[in-house]
Amino acid sequence: MPDSLDLLREAISKRAAAVVSLPTGNAFRHFKSRFLADGEEAVLMQSIPAEPALLEKVVADSAHVGIAFRSGPNKVIFTSLLVPRAAAAPPDALPVKYPREVHVIQRRSSYRVTVADDSQVEVRVWRIPDHAILRDRPSAAFEIGAKLMDLSVGGLGLNLETSGEPVLAVDQRLRVLLHFGDDEALLDARVRHAHDLPDKTQRVGAQFKKLENDLEGRQTQSKLSAIVAHLQRQEILRARLKEEMNNLNMQPRDDAAA
Image: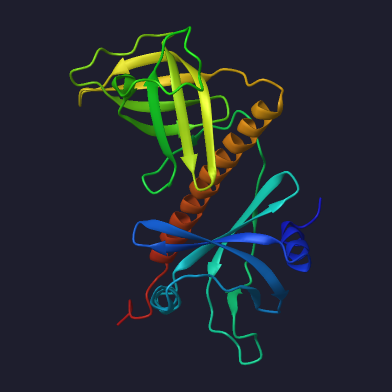
């Protein structure tokens, strides 16, 4: 099996597209980029439209950033540091310290990913009758306030605002609209389990109806898969950054013996 770093070297040689994630407090900001060149200590990436003050702070704080790119059917992700640009580097290049390892995310259709508050994935949910046509926009009275908790290509978990509304029953049909960036997926779902929470909301698990094997169905499947992949990258990046921060906190300080 090839060294996982070979995937990075291959991506650099192909000047592959990538996403750079910069930490901003407890969240991340994501920027499209691509690999430009390989170096002994740093990978040169295309500059990103981030504010100079944010980039300067990330460098000054030695804050870990995330890089994600595609390798065949899988996603590859690593965390590293931004470093000052060398004099010989192109003026628009973003230097990233060469990582010690990268991590391959294998695509699994059943993978259910947790949705964080900064996920940038929006959801709208309506209760609809069995005879309704999914593409027809239902009355606003049928829309339910919902927070997306987890998602897979097979279904999703929601926290629903139920105060003053009848709770959802198992087998209730739902119209689900997921939105992230340029991707929007309209899905037909059924409630498979539901229970009330102490804060007067309702936790619901719903299963998506199998999509038709036509152009529209394949397009919806592709958009849904892209949204799940985005959330999965965020989840792994967040875990990696947390692990690295914990490791840094465990290291003895230079003045510990003073």
